Image 1 (cartoon, rainbow, N blue to C red):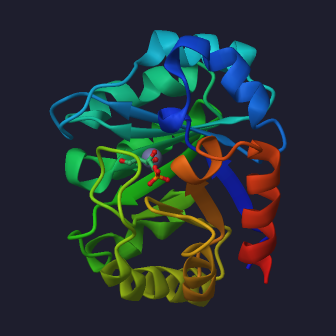
Image 2 (image 1 turned 120 degrees about the vertical axis):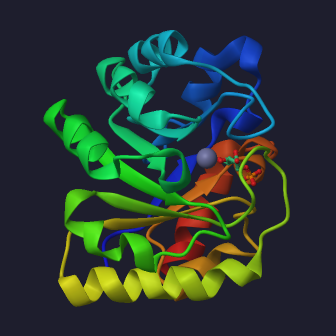
Length: 218
Ligand code: DX5
Ligand code: ZN
């Protein structure tokens, strides 16, 4: 398994001060950007023009998590806007291989996300086509939700498949990740940890990031 990465989600940041909020997490590995369209999920955030501005302002690479319907149509815009990684939801993609290849051709890392009720097995054969699998540990849509332990068996299955295939594929968790839950995720095989409220809700964001990193590596 690779060095654990911490990716704070700016969903819990102050949207009126995003450049400053990115500076607050400059010790983190990636800034996680949640794109929501009020259709795939019942919430609306931001789109590619804002991601382009964030990419120019951010001290660390942007990890874009697209929670949008018809994602094959939109994904490339985010790579072109400067995101280092673009993750599409399996449930929103009719052609995940084509979209992942287009993202990689544009120089971005390609991620594939699975909602809690989406089985990994249907996507297992696609592992060589992606750089990351995102196992959602809450129903996507909002920050600050309670971690769902029922997602841990799937996380283990993804880790086993990645290791068995000996692939350079990251395994990310997103939703309810905190000082209380991160060790469970690490033990089950995650190596990229998204945390929104646990980082932005802390007075000392850098301290929160350092503690999460330590707990993930323990
Ligand atoms: C939820 C988003 C998450 C969210 C996590 O749909 O994908 O990235 O910001 O927030 P916390 O860490 O507060 O659960
Ligand atoms: Zn996310």
